[in-house]
Length: 520
Ligand code: GLU
Image (tube, rainbow, N blue to C red; front, side, top):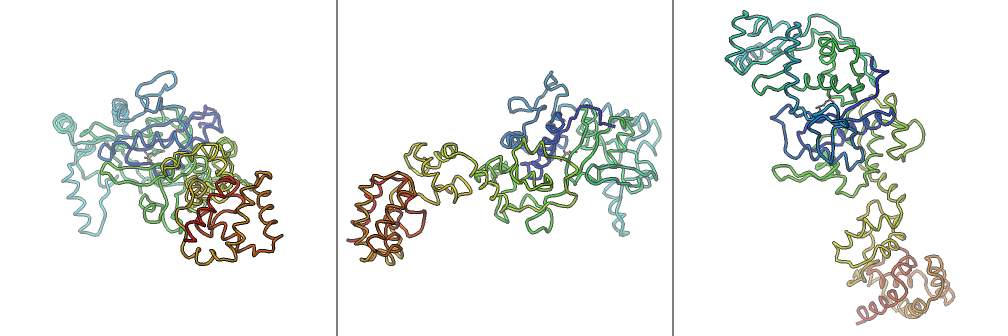
């Protein structure tokens, strides 16, 4: 088997739309596996189904992987799919539509060796057979029984076949599934599986109409030619595994056949059913890594645009169906690749939890320096029309960081760290702007204006509170009144933190402004 070979894994998406987070998780597990085994992570674009091709999807896939930091070692160069073989990308091209010449040869080889046959049935003939079966309450399957009664190279004479191959373009090459054979398979996650070939149909491998292979043929041929050692992919491909085993056998490639690992599905937060592409809109969280604008102009939100850090997103995804077997929950990409193992991937579906995604982001936000966060905050401030500096933004972040899950929260939670309030919440004014608080506030304003102590929240708080207590003023009332003057409402950050950020002069000016506006 494949053990002694150098590890080579691949992520092989079809460019049929944006990559769902389940697809990103598949790519991530392949990446982690490759890194752990000092192997190569290949990106291959499986675009042989031209009917399902969506413009922009390939670029989206590359950009999504780049944002996540799970960059392919092979198949992509300068943000583009490699179209020719080279020393760094020896197995190119990496887009299947550019490898079409290869597949026909292999399909013909199967025919020569008796593992496949030509099928000439027209769509109308097959539709008639389907209708006939349905009328009897049965389902039509192109298989070892029905193929004996259909128009193919097994039932027609040699000359007739040659004529049809020459003169028609609707024919296909189908796999000739052997009768009553038990396919014995091993999955690295699911263990041993056996399937009898009598339950399997004769899948189309190649189509004359577009001279393209189907997924099954192209996938097996490419995994072989690209020397893939492990195939790690979604559970939806498990039903195809017996055919894939049969194809390896038919080609005589069992010795280098990759090992397989089928990942469980991602489930809806309720645990009921598969997490679908539409769930994000319905349930209010993104199911795509990046924003996607469909060719029809429909916009779908993404984790990146919603303000998630790629490290948090990746960490969260890694834990959907896997864990390191200890208490750790926060792991970098490097730590993940050290800890990862397919043996610890769960067999059952992994329930997606949008709250956990937010929790991860909050944790990563807390680990970042104020300076780094300030850099991410500057564009938001600019958008809000605020003229600030990264140094000031970092200072503001230091007092608000613990309350935020996203960089955008810095603004929504405390715009008053950047702009003086222009309005005051009426119900707070009614409740807190009262004479017994306003009197002392004038004195407190003077204390703040003259403050020359340490510019640290704790010291500022000590000075103000000590002064109020010493004068036996009602501390709660005075503080609320002060907060109203500083922020425009009675809720928000601690007073000392606000003053520490905006400075004593600005704080005193805001108190003056409140007096002039509210005492009119
Ligand atoms: N092209 C398939 C997909 O879109 C790849 C399946 C596989 O990895 O074998 O998921």
